[in-house]
Length: 484
Image 1 (spheres, rainbow, N blue to C red):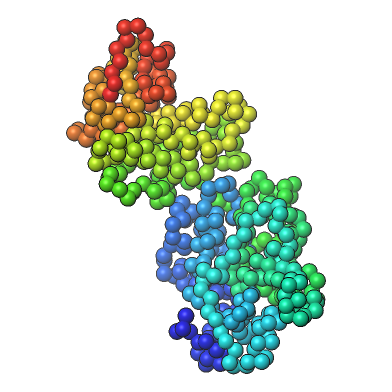
Image 2: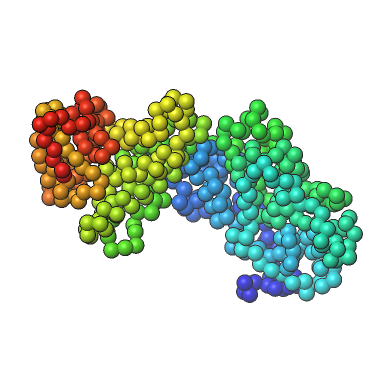
C-alpha cells in the first residue's frame, strides 16, 4: 500500500493523527452512521433480519457494545460476524513488525515502544487491510488461555538472549493479535471455564494480563460471540460473570416465511451449473424444497434444540438440481428441469440435517424425510389451489390402475404417462400450475398433485416411484401398469 505514508514522520504530516478514531468501536460507529445515512443495507447477503436482528445489532454497535448472537445452527450468525469487516476502514497504520497492530501514536508492546524510541520519525509504518483486522476462533474444550491470551515463549528467550520475565519473550495469543480490530469467538459456551475467566479483564477494563509477566496490555478490540440458546444459561456452560459483561444479547431466527426462505436458498444454492445442460428450476420445486424445512421445524419427532438448519433446503436444492442434471445428461437433453421425483433423490441432504427425538428414531430418518416431502407438496398445492377436486383422479387409481414415474425416466415419456390419468393434465393447466405445451412444467405440476394425494392417504407411492391405490402399493393381478 505504497500510496500511504511509510514512516511515522510522514504519517504525522499527513494529518492522520487528528482524524483517527479513538478506538475500533468508534471507527465502526462512525462508518455505521455513514452507512445508515446513505440508506444502504447494513450487511449484504444477509436476508430476513431487516426488521428483527439488524436493528438490534445497529443499537449495539452505536452503543459501542460487545455483543453475542444467540441462535440455532444455520441462522447466519457467522456470516453476520464476518460481514462486520465492512464497517472497518479500508486500511489502518501500525508499527511495522508489530504482532499486536500497535498504534504508532499509542504503542502498547515493548517492541513498538523500543522501535519508536530508537528510530523516531523514521519508524517504519505498515498498513493493515480491513480483512486482516478480523480474527475468528471456534471455541472448543481444548482451547487454552495461552491460545487466546498468550504465554511465555522460551524459544524467543533463548534466541534473543532475554530473561523469561522480559516482555519481548511473550507469545501473543489470538486476542492480542486482534488489537484494533474485531475478535469473534464462535460457540462461546464450549470454551473451558478458566479460559472464560481470562476474558473478564478485556470485557470490562479493556486490558489483559499474560501469565508470568508483570505487564498489562491495554487492548482495543470489539468482541463478538455466538452461542446456542440452550447452552447459554446460568445452568449451562457459560460463566455468569462473563455473561454479565457482554453488552447486548441478540436473538437470531430462521426465515419467518416460505417466500423469504426461498429467496435465501435461491441466493445460496449452486443451481446454475457450468456445462452444456441448461438448468431451469420451477418455482413449485423451490417452494416444495423450502417447505420441507418448515415442516421439519414443526415436527415433534425432530429435536427442536438442535434446530433444522437453513443449510437443509440449500443442500437439498443442490442435490435436486444434480439429479435433474444427471437425467438430462444421460438422456441427451439440452435442458434439465427438476421434478418432485428429484426431491426424493435429495434424501441424503435432508436426513443428514435433522436430529431425531426418541419417537423419531423409532420411525427412522428416511421415513420421516419422505413424509416431510409429501407434506411439503400438499402444503404447496393447498397454498396455490385451495381445496382441489381430485375425485376423478383418485377413482382411476381405485380401479386398480398404477403409474410409475421414476426419476431416471425422460420428461417426454413421463408426460405421456400422465395423459392416461383422467383429468390430471387438464386440472394442472386450468389451475395455472403449468402452461399448455410446456411438458416439463406439466410433469412437475402433475407430480405435485399426486404427491399431495399421497400425503392425504388417497393414493400410495412406492420407493420406486409407483403411484397406486391407497390400500396397497403392489400391483394386483390384472392391474394395468403405465410407465411414464
